[in-house]
Amino acid sequence: MTTIIRRYVETDTGHRVPNHKSKCRHIHGHRYRFEAEIEGDVVDTEGVSEEGMLMDFSDVSAILEKYVHDVVDHAFVVYEKDSMLVNLFDQLPPEHRIVKVPFIPTAENLAKWAFEQVSPHITSTYGNKLRLVAMHVRETPKSWACWRE
Ligand SMILES: [Zn+2]
Image 1 (cartoon, rainbow, N blue to C red):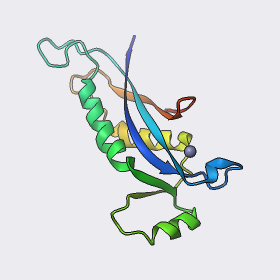
Image 2 (cartoon, rainbow, N blue to C red; image 1 turned 135 degrees about the horizontal axis):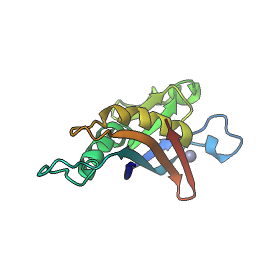
Image 3 (cartoon, rainbow, N blue to C red; image 1 turned 120 degrees about the horizontal axis):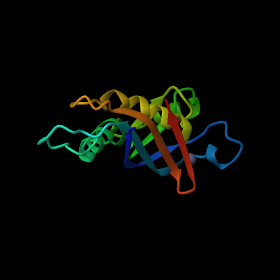
Image 4 (cartoon, helix red, strand yellow; image 1 turned 120 degrees about the vertical axis):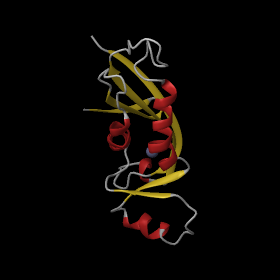
């Protein structure tokens, strides 16, 4: 038996899908939601702050903030082989936050990326076998992708 907890962070992030047949090829952005799904056992160590929890939600939030939100919020994620945009962004002053990635920034690929950023930091203090099992990414209210190990 295991228990699951989920916690999310939201970002305002620009992207484009360079080869897309329609409007996703345009420069645009989304209010993304990155939602971590963590599995493990409930802490049964008496008297500790996490007793009765898998992990403190605020600790999950701090990890999501540091490794996802603070990287891509109010930023533009661009595929490193999208030469038109890479050349354009190279002209911009350095205060603009451009995040070059080795993949086309679809919701599916961003889910895998965020999983890889967050997973090493979900660690168990009380031997309760915590692990990140999935990262869900909402691109629009009707569109989600999920990366699962
Ligand atoms: Zn889009």
